Amino acid sequence: MIKEQMKNGMFAYKGLSGTYYQYDLSNPVDKQLYETDIAAQTRDKLSHNLYRQLENGGGVYENL
Image (cartoon, rainbow, N blue to C red; front, side, top):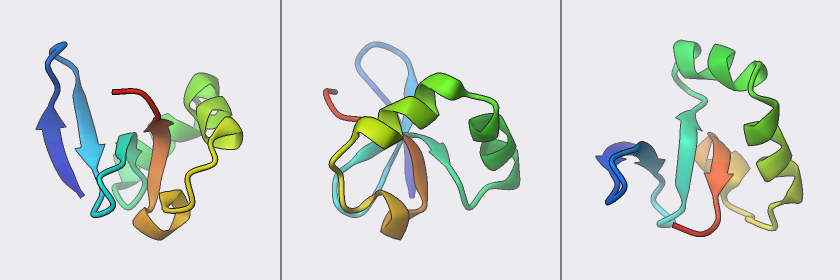
């Protein structure tokens, strides 16, 4: 995944599908941070995004 800076100044990872994620779960540091981020996990549980597991992203951003 590619790390990009968004218009609001925050960074996000962009998967090949065009979906943005807060974490790149192939990165051990991001994976550990994701495991303690309840808000990101909740976004993933509520998301209907089919690419999340294929792209190994966590903390999907639906509306960027």
